[in-house]
Length: 126
Image (cartoon, rainbow, N blue to C red; front, side):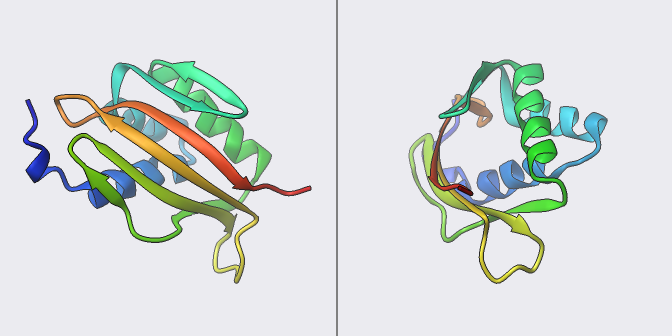
């Protein structure tokens, strides 16, 4: 079991954001497999999936919807025990304002990989 005192919540969030920015399908699949448990899930207002293929497909779909945009952390990562939360931004690289702003809550499994993500969309394009 992972000692919750040793979990680097910010590092997990940074790896998560990097997976969402990975445009190469094979590298993205590897990143998802390294981050999520085999039956790990992702749920937001637009998707509810489980398993590596489902998560990778949601990421690919977001990239197709917003080509050339990048995800960034929108502020500090907050976490305790096996749970973390953070705001993220999506927009053109270097843009002064993000196009999309969201908030994710991530639950980790005992091995430190993601068990589930619950995403919320705070600002989306009209």
